[in-house]
Structure formats: structure tokens, C-alpha cells
Image (cartoon, rainbow, N blue to C red; front, side):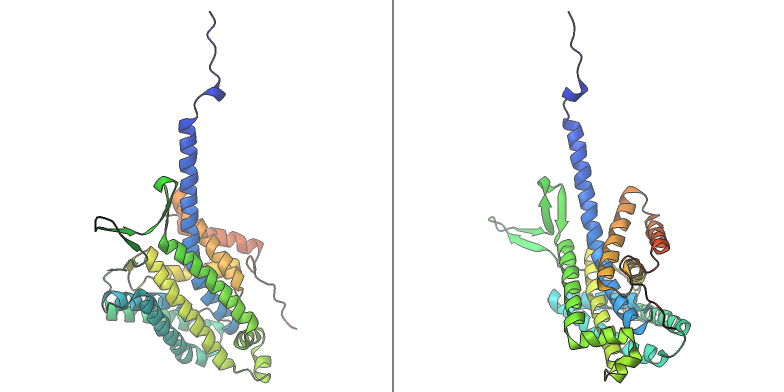
Length: 329
């Protein structure tokens, strides 16, 4: 009697399908986390892009303004008991004023100075803000409050706190902080694009970024326009600081240093001076970083991110969406 051979195709594929399903859900989870982190980088990179586009300088103190905004929101919510939205608005106001003061005191006297002098000044302002924060708020880590949650009242009188939306039976979870971060990033990019294209002040910013001398001859107040650009970038830094600490709740005086450097990398990656380029560079950078941590090495993730930047700049020196600028002779 012949025993029929078992065909591998007819074998039950339950375990294989489960492994495939787990892999897909894990991949989607990392992708969503990467887009969320990249959205924070994109918001910070928009500030770098706008400042560089009009002032042709790299404001390395931008990352520390993120830290200041996070601290202002933290104390407003935790110490004074203000609503979270009020804390965010207060952080935006304080960072806007701080950005304009830094521009007026540190950068405006150096408009005609060599770029190296401006760069050294920006680094000095960065260290000043870090040490000032350490003196004011100490270097002890603070846990940022998690206010991006929803509280539900159950029938038995108990309360259930939900921090996100779950799919696939709870195997895929998307936090409210992630959803809000991505939505805020998209809205900010759309509003900035509309502002620069369809408003008089936005067109003044574009004119100053092209040629400050010609813009001044056309009656545009260059100093006011540059101050406005610093104000917008600093307000965006405050929003980014709150969103960053909502996802990674540890707050210290150096919180904004590495995100600031990575956001600058994202701005260069996408094409510095381009608003869509800042968005694209930020999201790609966040996705690459999360995938590198998940599938390669946590310790090497930063090195992989900067290695990808080097490769992109070797192929496209102006970035992914940057424009080639021809110098006038």
C-alpha cells in the first residue's frame, strides 16, 4: 500500500501566516513611529529653512529654543495648573519673543560680518541658553505631563484612560500624540506655504531671500521681515518642543540639542530653503532613524542617519528638493 507523500503546499500555513502578520504589523508600527518623529524634525527644520532662506545663516540656537518652549509648557501645566492648550500658546509667545530678542541682540549687528563670525555667535547663544536653563530649572530630569490622552467614564463608575487607537486586536496601536503630531506638521506646512505664496509679508520674505538690496529698494523693510522670520521659526520650535516631549517625556536643559542637529540635517537632506523639502527631509530622516534602531542597531542609528545624508549630498548637493542657484558674475 502506497503512502501518499505530503505536499508542502498543502501543509497548514497557520504559523507562517501568523509570523507574516506579526512582521507586517511590527513594520507598520515602526513606520508610524518614524513618520511621527519625522514630523517633529520637519517642524523644527521649517524654522531652519525659513531663517536660512532669508538671512543665509545657520541658527544653531534653534534647538535650544525647543527646550525653552518645552520647559515653559511644562511649568504652565504642571506647576500653575493651566490647560494644555494655554501652556502651548504661552510657550509659543515666550519663544517668539525670545527668538526676536536673540535676532536683535546677537545676529542683527553681524549682518555684514563673515559667516564664520555668525556661526560662532550662534553656537555661543546655544550654550548660553543651555546654561541659563540649567541655572533656572536645574539639570534634574523632569517628566513631561502626558495630556494627549482621553478619559472614558465606565458604567460602574470607574474611569479608563486611553492613550491611542488600537487596530488588529490591539497588536497595532497608534497613540493620540502620534496622530496629533502628524496632523500638526501637515497643517503647519500648508499654512506656511499659503503664507509665503499669497500674503504681502510672505512675498516680502521671498523677496528678501532672493536679494535684500533689491527688496529694500522696492520699499520692503528688511529688518522687520527678518525679525518676523525669526519669530515664526521660534514659534514653530515651541510647538515642536511640546510635541517632542509628549512622545519622549524626559526634559533636561540639553533636550533640544540633538533634535536640533537632526532637524538641520533634515533641512539639508530635503533642500534647505525649501518648505516642502523640510517636510520631506524630516519625515525621511525620522523613518530612517526608527528603522535603523529597530532592524540594525540602536547605537548605530545616528551614524546611519548621517551616512545617508552624506550619500544624498554626494548625489544631489542641493538636497532632494533644493534648487541649483547660479552665482551672478
